[in-house]
Length: 111
Image (tube, rainbow, N blue to C red; front, side, top):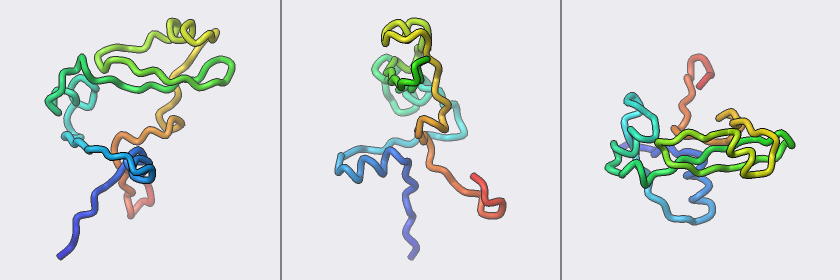
């Protein structure tokens, strides 16, 4: 009998390495994936759910902002808050964020 192997994100692996307990939640990846829709699909009040955004300042420093899922980060206000001339969103690939376990297309050797 084959065992179903749970696919894990990088965050899940890190939590396990550090022996930090967590509960994974799943939702339909083919449905809407914005924060408000995901919160509602998981039975959570969107006002109580936050998203983490990573930015890079003009000086090269990195800054992390946690904001409500229904809100947008005002980059000018964020820059002022951290004493930078400007900040820009870090591309998802650079942030290390892995919202969905990655699957490789074995035939093409791609994700």
